[in-house]
Amino acid sequence: MSLADTQRLIALLATDASLRTQLLSDPLAVAARYGVDAKTAQTLAKEIAEEIERFARSLIGKRRNEVCKLLPRTKRVLGNCFDDLFRLYAKTTLPNGTKKHLQDAVQFADFLHTKLPAEKQIPLWIAELARYEASWLEVRTHPCLLIRGFRALTKETAHLEANPSLNPALRPRRTLALWLRLPGKERIYHTYLTLF
Image 1 (tube, rainbow, N blue to C red):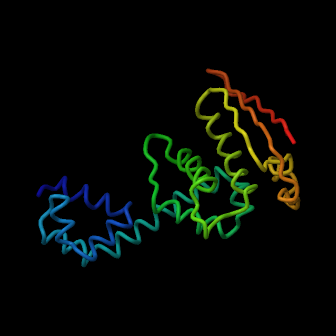
Image 2: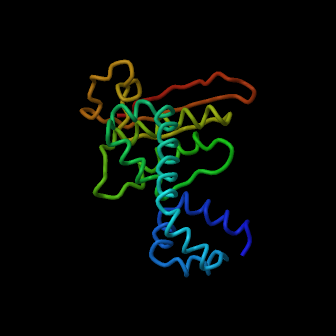
């Protein structure tokens, strides 16, 4: 056992809910798997488990707050459900790299669109609103041409902030959206075409 092994285990425990559960139920198996001694694993299980859980909730809360800022329309239409859905997403996904908040927002939008369990499904137009907002983030971070198809995006959905009282679920439309950001330029060109 080394200090590095112990630190690595603590870092994993802070971000992996299933590993925390395993540590509480069988600290010796976790000790063997991660190269720490049994006494250290038992100490972590008894004395630090609550603190690690509190720290993990704090990290998820910080991540959620950043994603709220990046996907404000999605947050507005989901209301309190946003927090529950983000916690569900955060249990299984941890961003890596240098632009973690942006990556988190894009992955959360994808989660809402394609990976929600059946009992947590949201209206398609809300999932597509999240994808639409995330597309803007992708283009801001990487100069590119981005073309996305949407099955339920409407002009009202895309500009929900202008009139939040609109109910875009009433007339879902197939839409093709295009973003263009040239290398070395800040300006983003955007248009969309409602197909039918």
